[in-house]
Image (cartoon, rainbow, N blue to C red; front, top):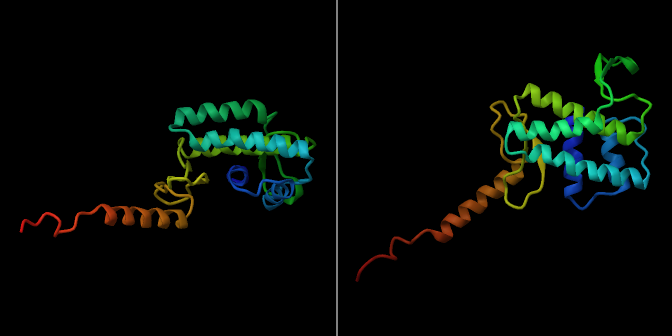
Length: 178
């Protein structure tokens, strides 16, 4: 699931104010992407890629999500193969390890999103439902019904709904005839 969580972090990084060469490299290091050093052109390419990744999370249904992932796979996955490098257990690679970092990020994100979509039957990738929140997430909850990117967004939305109800509730004394 490394590629799925990398996709989430790239999309969310782009949605915030911290998109920079250092910020993107930090995300790549966090996800243990080897040789994460980037040029300004690579940062621009990954920014464009993150826009395309967002479409996967924002897809309204499984069919639309599959079309979005297939478009990513065309550009991102050069060839799938199994490997056990660096004493790791067997895992898939979606492009040769010698490829540049942008190609490797595109491959791991598109391939991992495809695998998760198959395993989750087209669900589990979403955008936060809190108004104004641009973040995306992977629903790892047991029941698969998560709607917010974080507890903080869920709580803030509940507070806002409560305030809205109390502002618009009619007082019991409003309709009293005297």
